[in-house]
Image (cartoon, one colour):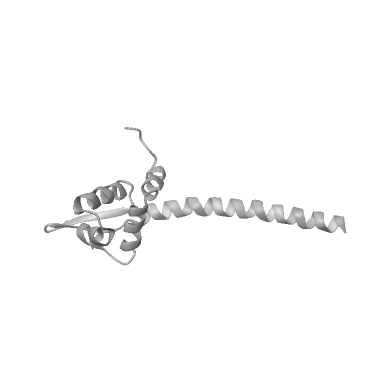
Length: 111
């Protein structure tokens, strides 16, 4: 198995729409695997596999309570992904602002 960085694992886990839906659902609060499976229309076993991927990526934390597995958001890894996205957002905004300034200056020279 190829070892991935935590950020790679997070983005790989987020690439699936079902798993993104799980995170959206958990944004409203903790839920059991069964509660997550019902609106998604998949089996509890199928949902458990998706939850395991999210858990391995650090995006979800689970806790066994009695016969159920309670899931909640694992905020730390989401914060790491958001920091990475924010860095590149600022980088591209600066580059685009520079491009805008260049074109504005070019328009001024044409007049």
